[in-house]
Length: 369
Image (tube, rainbow, N blue to C red; front, side, top):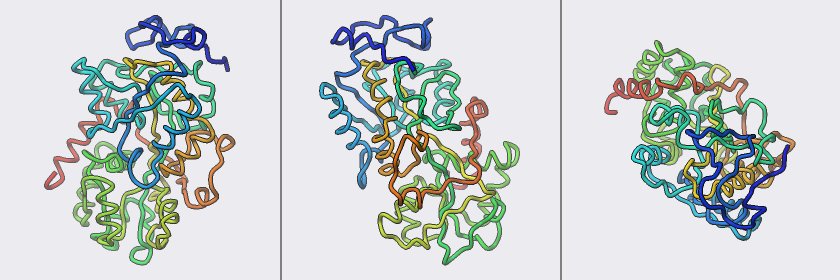
């Protein structure tokens, strides 16, 4: 791969203006020798993300700050975690207001479809120039986020699954099982309007039952007593861990956390109904109005380093984005992080123009939502 050709590195200072800076409206494309604005090794980078990247028990964000600033002593990182996540930046872009951030850490495929349904096609983020990334070819096979505009690269991935208490219920083998009397009043799910895992579970059922059949399936879940709560944290810590229900929509890496916390593992069994898990890769994108796109690309490349991938996986309790030969994980992670026999997802093309409608139809049918 061609080595970095940041002009800022040659000149030893920040570049002014947007000469050659790639935007969705620009004529240039990666590989044409265009120049990224800014300096790749100095300046302040504002990284927007979600709360759990910064808060909680041993989050990844503070480690990333220290390691990146150690590697690039003239650079610094500031974090922001807006309450409404990426939607805040979509709204600011609509208003042509300042974004006050350079990158967003935690973009998923659903977000990309929503961006393009709201803004101009290919909007909000730069098309990443992989020629400026030494480690882009480390990403493991099958982790393509399906963006036709190449705006994001994955930095980790997770799988939505069911987590259950084996002392109360047996492992459900299919989605249909969840509508049977054996699972009456057993399942906790999350609101697809307000929760990423909730939205992923809804999309999983759409993948399984189709756009014409998923509402009927949810009617059956309702009839069998599914409880829907607003977000994953409240439903997991406030309801499942309080043993109000024996099953919850959660992550297939749940046992990594449970083992680290010395929890009773009988209550943290993983189920993959239909032998599937819903893949939810998380990506990083550089805003097309970033103040220092060159430094942002350096940060993207840093996230794909072996050390960063190991720390993100274990602190964020998600799978690495890079192939196994590029990352060493603790033995417990390999033991307790489960991959489904089949990973499914609703891709970008199916989500375009339909995502919000599916969610609104689902919410309209649910009592009290």
